Picture 1: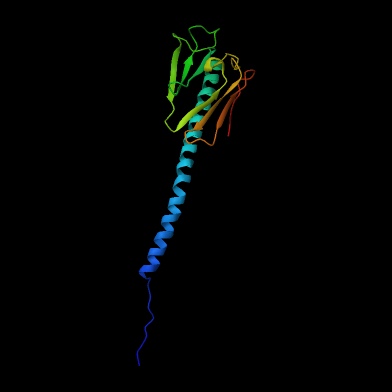
Picture 2: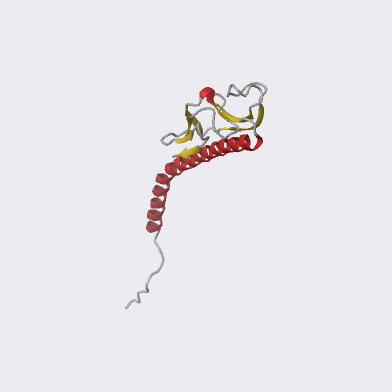
Amino acid sequence: MKNWKKQTGVTMMELVIVAVIIGVMAALAVPSFLNFASKMEAKSKARNVVSTLRQARSKAISERVQYGVFFDAANRRYLFFKDKANPGNYQFEVGDSIVGRDTLTAKVNYGGNTFTNSTVVFKTDGSASSSGNLQILPASGGFTYTIDVLASTGRVKLTD
């Protein structure tokens, strides 16, 4: 009579099935992850814009000089400037002092912009030159971050 020993371990077929299942799950997860990464990069840029706008308002109040942010959609950037050249025009002009600048990456786009002359200038009392909003969206689309500025108070708000 033969002695049958209990066999332990996994067969090659079981290993192949597990590898196929993991491969299919990974293939399904990659597009979602790429969209998530693009969405998070757009949100990060939107937060940077909000931070720059709030800094411009804060500097205008504390230094008693107008500061603004100019959105240059053609060059995919925005400029933070001290409004020195012609403060009554409420726009970015030659002679204004650039305090900072930032450029959007290829994964992020500007959407609509309703600010007059694509510029927000904060007055010394904290109010803004005009109300408006700016949209920032991932290049992959499907989601929009909106930045609103209220002229009377200079409040800056980010909405998803």
